[in-house]
Image (cartoon, rainbow, N blue to C red; front, side, top):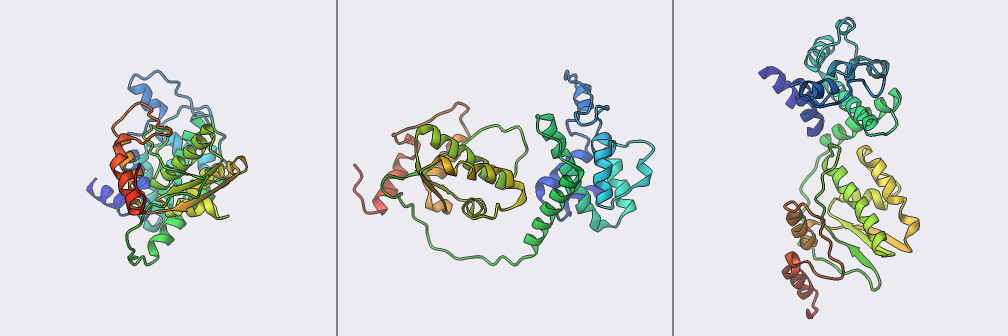
Length: 300
């Protein structure tokens, strides 16, 4: 088993995919049969094909999954007779194909699981081609990014800047349980989407959406929707554009908006919804005074 875990953690794919593979090999994914074994009252039929949903079934036991593996040219003939658990599937693929294909296998398995979860929550099932193309693009983007040199970029301290007269900057913090396992970029994009919705509900019509994720802010600003894992979120954010009289997005480093950073740290420890409108949250009152003083204004 030590060799297995070493193999998993050395895969050239995102950490969330490696963590998923580890959970799958440990047989702790919440498949319907697994939930039933734990005395949770659920129907055990697969939401995609109607057969009993085991780990082996999710990843190999129905036509959609088999088609996806065929597209990737990942075939393991030993699996055709009996559907194994995920650990058996992992070792079977490892023996059947060279090690460089394990990243493709891991990314496709993760994509199949995400499709299963999406259907479980009422979304439309993707086609085999959509799953395959999304997985391939996602993995290629990650691996290409890792191969690029990333020298440290020196920069001076960032200062918070007020919006133009009549405009509002969206600054907030969100602590909320979401039904999907999201990565850092997806969380940043999701928070931006919720911020747009909240601004509209408050009646704000000239806004600046400011965040500390350069990738997400650039995707919102440009025609390019950014990395594939946030395409749908960026598209939904941009769909709000016609509803506002004017809006734009901007990137700032964390030290350029320390008040929002303090709010985010505070939000992790509360369970209720707390909203301040036309009032300064006491948690950031001193930081607001510091920001105003640096700008050369006299706080009132």
